[in-house]
Image 1 (cartoon, one colour):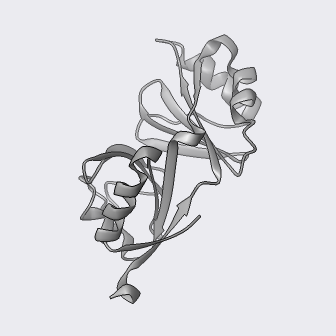
Image 2 (cartoon, rainbow, N blue to C red):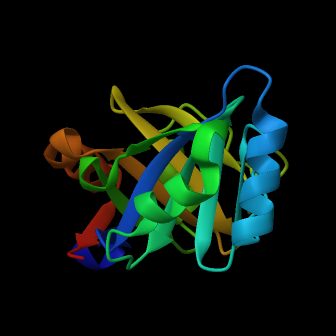
Length: 174
């Protein structure tokens, strides 16, 4: 049975900052982020990446900006770029992430997530805020393998990993 489990990899090698635009101020914020970081802020339900940065949006006017393996300087860099055009909150230590991939990943996640994961509804570049075993999670489809990344609050990590295990995933440490 263990060999039949889907491999998943825990990730802790990223920094995460919440970015919010004031009402109606998304254009200025997007322009600054685009000019300074080369990153396009995506619309709700999408994510984008450029220059080592990833931006994920599930709510209008709010984004999560990630950087892999960052030394903690992401918040300071964004603060210098954003200035008065938006609000920032460092969430780096507050989230855990798991990457799941392979031909059986979609079917296993479908038992856990109340989302339509069929390729006609969710493809690479899509993102959603949803629940997994009654826990709030963010899901983004990385590629069409399919590969997914799921994030939840660190305080729910044990329950989250258990739910993934019950859905058929074997999680390797970060």
